[in-house]
Length: 405
Ligand SMILES: [Zn+2]
Ligand SMILES: [Zn+2]
Image (cartoon, rainbow, N blue to C red; front, side):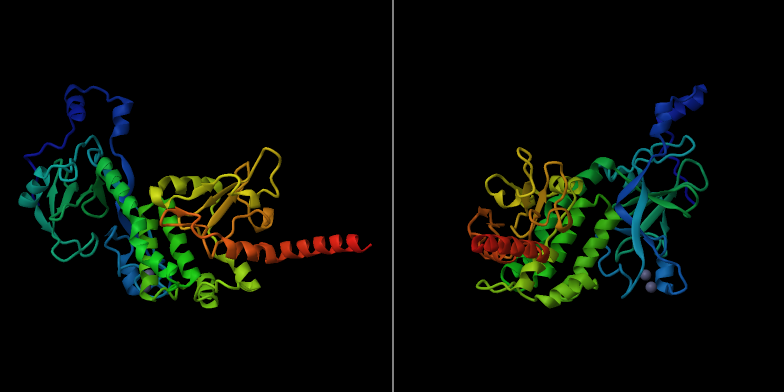
């Protein structure tokens, strides 16, 4: 085993404290040994039940790189394995017992240290424990003069650390760089579904398939978790492979089968009309706020200001209006009460947000190009739910009776 003599991994504060036998301040102790949620790697977690196959069992606990999971997870049909967040060590705080400053200079912006380990380290065979890829080689070097402490770097820029002789390996991540990469991913993720948006708008995709894609896309933005995001991406790419026909989830698959295309412009029947309630996407206010914050500008939901929200004020009190929001493409709606309660079939079906087959705004940024005549006229005919329709018919009946007698 090679030992890194040239680089001193004892942080200044520790070195000084050790030399002068000074007690270290609490703040400095806190700054040391800091584990964070990884934004670059996820951990495989298999069920380890009696039906867990050898492949899944073997992968348990392994690290995978975000963005390299396509075709790896899930391992096979009906794979019950999950991806869970991996703990990482923040660059510059990769320390225990007073050891400090494993400076991953590569991810900190300089290649100096990485090159040093690549040149002086030993080739490390991960046997699948670390993410493997054609052409990727790992090198490790002993650090801190502790026999179980090693830094591991790859020739393509990754850095790991272990304190127990490779039993537990942690990615080393630089917070600033990781945050920057996260922002960059968020800026372009929605755009990667442009093709799906076109397919749907051109009637080449079932409405429920589009709902599934959008629901997952919104969930991706709502999640602040690399492992959740990786699983969503894998799910969506599996869905694409089925020609947008099969999600493996009964609710969506039945919806795709029920309505393979948008209904005719001329006439929407009653079943098609109520099916809107299944197609809609809604979030509770807290999540909605968070979601809309993280969406790229052109994909944010828009508030429909009065009088455009007039249809949704039946249950609102004087001076306390409901608020209506519409998704960027005009298909999905959410209505919240003055007190931020999401209106739904249970609490205010007459005012709740409804899915639009024919959006009143288009995602080409052309508001109210097409009037929502189609959905409006069927609303007048059927109301939002069968229950509402019954009530309305009763009301009409009463009116009718009053006129007669
Ligand atoms: Zn398996
Ligand atoms: Zn599995």
